Image (cartoon, rainbow, N blue to C red; front, side, top):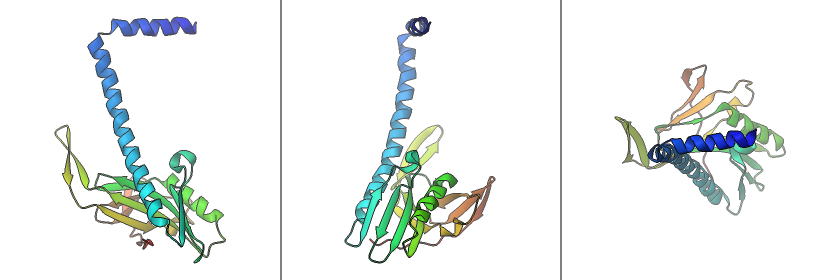
Length: 193
């Protein structure tokens, strides 16, 4: 039965004109390529953060990220007894968002390492030099200053229902709950680099 279904699907594909088949696969290819670029942008930011954090006093590692239900990065300073659980976001838009489940994972990992005197959940935001704008169905990019923000999210550690956190290009932070946006003013964390 399965062979018959496969044969029918192949036969149907031959009935569709070749140029329409190519258009369909071409569009899928474009979306796949855009997703790959977006993911690579995030991996690159994480990789650079780990390199910057790996100094004499600090040790940092990239973890599996969202696919492994872990934060993007953990960093420790064993001399000063500091632990950081970091969720990193980068993009070309004017706002970047951290979903509540990713913040929750950072707290779960942070709470596993209670031996450290100081432990923080850090939300790292990188706004790329290219700003994406969509006009009349077209996407264009304009140049802007590259900005990075590191925000402490510890104030959400005792909450059961965590919000989505939004950071804007100018560094302002907001929490989103039930489609309601409210300013939250997360404090900046001074990174050791």
